[in-house]
Image (cartoon, rainbow over all chains, first blue to last red; front, side):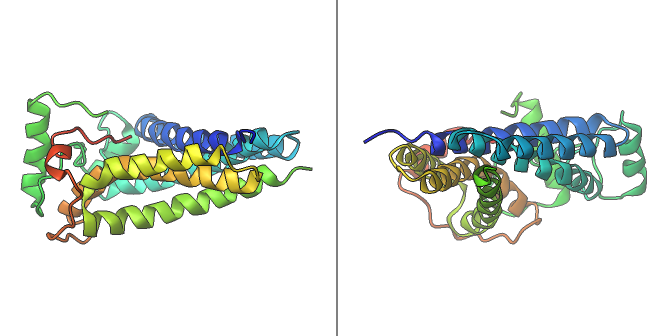
Length: 145
Length: 110
């Protein structure tokens, strides 16, 4: 029985596409003063990869280009979603970014803290405790993976 | 023209969308400590995909495996989201075998 590499290539494309997309969207959304050009780049890259998938001669290459294309197209939407998360305090705002500084001034829930950057405690926590838990983790020198 | 890659990309997007749903529900009822089992299941599926001769079957099983690997890295953050009240919190969890040991390990997240 021969080995079919399509599945492994699909898995790697999906996982690394999601991972790198996730990290890149958070990184650039926090630093860019206007997210629209980044969204346009993601759409162009996604469509370019899809065009490549149409002409790929073998299934594994077509799969990789098709899956990476869809992750780039999704990342364009993720820029919008990430900004929304920042507005409601579900993602940290970067006070040095003028766009985020405006969000911090306009949206009461926005915060520069990453409230997810800690281990679970196994019970609901209040807003004040959530801030303290993140600060405690920072004091202990815990670093996110 | 070869529509296989684009079709598989759209199916992968649906699989990942399903991943959001099971991570939320799974963490609520079972807790985040299942992450090593979910990670293992994902890796088993990826290895199994190597032995499927049909390209569609191999691609879908591989993408499904990747979504489980990704889901394993999301469970801890989802537990924190529930504690923060962003999602419903359920105190009673069905813990996995070896939960006491797993608790000492650092759960991965992206």
